[in-house]
Image (cartoon, rainbow, N blue to C red; front, top):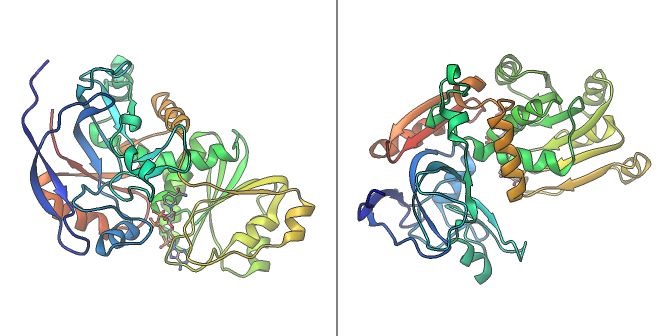
Length: 364
Ligand SMILES: NC(=O)c1ccc[n+]([C@@H]2O[C@H](COP(=O)([O-])OP(=O)(O)OC[C@H]3O[C@@H](n4cnc5c(N)ncnc54)[C@H](OP(=O)(O)O)[C@@H]3O)[C@@H](O)[C@H]2O)c1
């Protein structure tokens, strides 16, 4: 086993609202219950929300600086605590940013964003709960050797897909069903369109940006783009053309007070249909109590996902059902750690699904 270097470099937030810095830090020892991972590729989060979260301390979503911002990465295990049972040094892993306590679901953290309000949640920041093995032979080998021939930069977007898969599993979406996703053109909405299609569903992709919707249709199978107006009667009529609608999924962003299309989604969803709320609008929702009751509609909210969802999602990708990176039709652009400023600017340029900006802190 190669000896670990004594230091690593990382882009660090020292103070909210201040520029990030490229620091050299000591590599910690692999204590029991932890793993040291050499990060090969990481997604530069494109969302406006992520930048806002770094611009000033948010009372709910923040952590004590200094910290390394980010939202998921792919790397190789470089060292393991003595008690490690299944992970191996050298193994390719997905580092997931979200951790929920096994024995306390109230303890949850988003590593790189939010360390959780309680001492129990803070403890989770130091455990390897979020290392998921990836089948390197399948994902990275050449097609002629039976692999999917992905590059290391194609893999970190799995962190966005996980959110979508958590929501779709929570409503038990099945192959052949029809789901409305709104808005479908953002990073999480677009990832949800990909995952729902990979699960075998027909997807009605709702949005306002005709070009972005067309892009989803051209690149992802079974996608039907729809531009809605926000007018209940008109939108209901448009969605009714698709026949039976089994479910809807909402990803309304925090820039909006409330979802635009939820009432129309509810109106067209079948009896015993399902809805899942996954956005973060600032305001409240108002829906017809009578309609939900009369149709036995089950509406739930879903924050992130469970470990089982991540494992299931990885299988969907390893079996070739969920296409990743270039193969999914997305544009993947790579930067070194020294180019972190350019990478962040590039990610900010495009808020729609289809661009994956990746940084490579280490190379093999
Ligand atoms: N449940 C969870 O665990 C979870 C996890 C991650 C994120 N989220 C939340 O999910 C939401 C979406 O995240 P994201 O990363 O997909 O955001 P994003 O990439 O910024 O996308 C925003 C989407 O909202 C649409 N939109 C923005 N303003 C609009 C308006 N005025 N009218 C109609 N459509 C509008 C955009 O459409 P255009 O293309 O037309 O601009 C785009 O489709 C956020 O609130 C985020 O916090 C939830």
